[in-house]
Amino acid sequence: MGVEIERKFLVDQKAWEKLEKPEGLHYQQGYIPSDDNCTVRVRIAGVHGYITLKGRTKGISRSEFEYEIPLADAKAMLDQFTQNGTEKIRYKFPAGNRVWEVDEFLGPNKGLVVAEIELEDEHEVFEKPTWITDEVTDEMRYANSNLAVRPFLEW
Amino acid sequence: MGVEIERKFLVDQKAWEKLEKPEGLHYQQGYIPSDDNCTVRVRIAGVHGYITLKGRTKGISRSEFEYEIPLADAKAMLDQFTQNGTEKIRYKFPAGNRVWEVDEFLGPNKGLVVAEIELEDEHEVFEKPTWITDEVTDEMRYANSNLAVRPFLEW
Image (cartoon, rainbow over all chains, first blue to last red; front, side, top):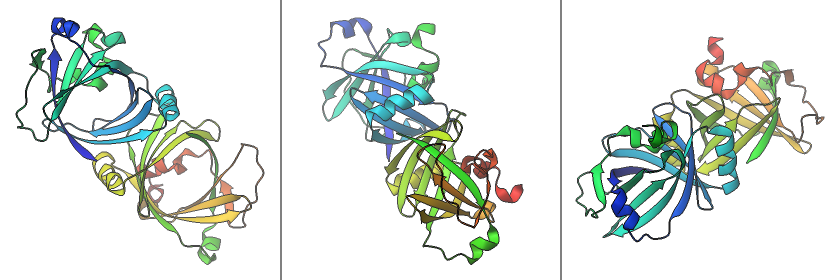
């Protein structure tokens, strides 16, 4: 178990296109319909499968439980238990002792690029690369579970 | 991943009380509210934690994905994510190359004793101990997820 403290920002499209990027990892994920108290996510990241349970967001903190599972299980669960999902390429950019995780969405969320940074505490100061723009931490429509149901291209 | 083929029977109360039993294991479990396609169960069995996802029942078969998780995670999830649950003592009785699992329910399901046997295929023939009575495989009110919401003592 962990408590996740994350801040989320939009990425400038033009700067992003020109940026030299590390190799990205393909993510496919879906959500098992559940109540508001808990999000149940099945994810395939490259050749690894995961199941993740996340609690309700409190401020910018959220409890999170993640377990690696066999890839075949993740595929079967995505197929049998989830209806909507998101697909994206994730890139990692180290920044000091933190890492920016940048998600370039595909499919019905194509055109959306979002950067996240995980912090030790809510008031931690951190450096922002020049390609980072508006903060959207509190905008629920950018939550992956919401993007799965109401994708960016339909906004 | 596995496909679970189980048959479920009631246990004769009087015979059960007189029966010489092996040592039982204490189970506490709760359900994360989800849609009908998938049941998400958090279980503590003795000192071990588990998360289990089960698909919709088709006949007497059901797909099942179970993972052991840290006990502290299971406790935190039962606390944060589940509202109703069941508590029971499980006893195991070997029978040929099969095992009868007998659940003696506690709390709001006290008085209910149910025996289950897991089979290789739907038509397998198996021996029934004398303390086994009516089959309730298809009676959904005996599903643990339903007993959590509408317990035996309220029937």
